[in-house]
Image (tube, rainbow, N blue to C red; front, side, top):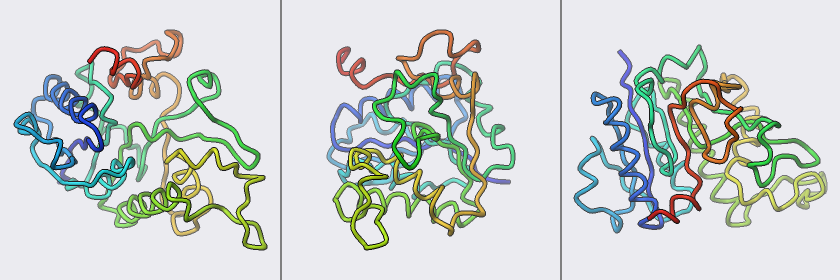
Length: 242
């Protein structure tokens, strides 16, 4: 029997910690039996963290979320961004979505491009969203993928890594440096350009199912005819209401 649980990460600011606690509370409300691990900076913690079943400490890197994903104590994990909220009891059925995939993401479809800051570049375009992620680490390569995703993102943010031309210089013609702010670019690179992970089965929820499981607050109503499960608030909206 595989262990199953949820993972939420809070780093850098109290805003993300409060958001993470609210998210865990909403998971427990709709799925009382759920096991939830909180990945958090020690400096942010207070007694509210006791709502989680397990705590892992992280540093203040702005993408500590990926560090946390690699540290999940569960065989099967549903990672959820801290600025989300569970709004439907179907959260208890999330692990039924795997469908033989090793890692399952939601999508960044063209029809919702009005919500995205950047979607296309000369050598490709984003297709996977890292806001939520279902993954199975009983395949050791999956956990290694998460480790590599984090380490590549750290180097990307620090200006230590970028795709290169044959002469070794950075290929900013095909991969403009504006992409360096997105952990979804390092994700895209590992999925599409790293042979090491060619055997992994990457899945993507599309259409109504995508919008159900990662219902961004700025989506227009016609993007989802089914009731949402994971409501993804925009950071600006949350901060305004705090």
